[in-house]
Length: 401
Figure 1: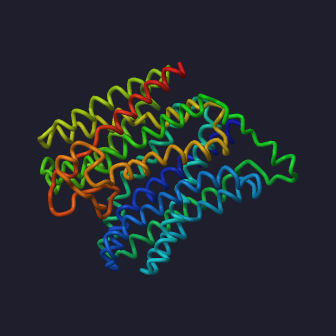
Figure 2: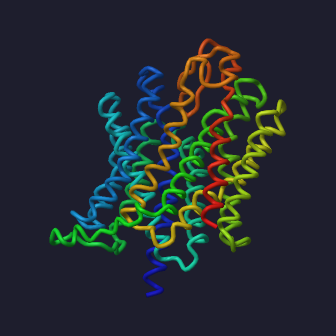
């Protein structure tokens, strides 16, 4: 039994590592494709949005399909999207096909998150340690992908994209040879036997809300703060390209420390401290005007937030099922999607943008925004989302204690 648990855990670790490479590379790939085929910059934002829609839809599909197709067939059907999507990107520049490709890549991303969460959480004696180790694997993949894509892109854009398709195929083959539980329901009675009781659990919705705001807070920094530092001249342009690597490095270190060095004896209180430090570092970043403090604060922010997501999911305990994750993870992920919507305004949503009167447009190759018209201060962000994130986090964790 223990050998089987180890095998399933390792499958979750390995596939989440590969998913880190494939998922994080999408922002780089869309930039390469734009340069290769010359489509409008606005299309890059559309393609990445379609990937986000696919990611959300995947969670819902993973919650419903296993009862009809069985767990393994559902996983294989949905996770092949990485290989198929990136292969299509390497073969054509047709906008419609590229849109479909990014959409199926998003479905694969969401499906892998759901599947890995179940594999690791259900087969780990220490859920918190297991989930932090799993997310460390993702961070390793995210750290590796820029170097991998940059090396391949020196030869050709097609090689870089086909390399990602190959990584996606390896991920899919891991699932092919992994004994995934869950068979096709043979009767209506079995289909009705799915446990929906988690929907009545306050704990489930509190954790989901916490993850929603955590994703929104993280996106506010990854998507806009780095762009603001670059456009305002606080961080030199040559160094700005490495800030995301700095943040993923901090994330990796934080998760590994939780997994191996400082195990969380009281996860709920730990999440409170994470929220406190995230808030402090965020507001410190808003006040900094020099390069070294900005980089150090980005590192500190990512480090303090590193364990929030895996620890919150681990705290769901026995509610961690295919169906419950099919609702929790998409709802939580929508925080990162709705965050840009809240900031895509015309000078009305926050004091900084009212002050400068900026409109924003998508930044090529990233999820960030930068000001149109050449002005630089428009990268300034509203502080409301992070404030809400922390306040909600305090309330939720306190109620769970």
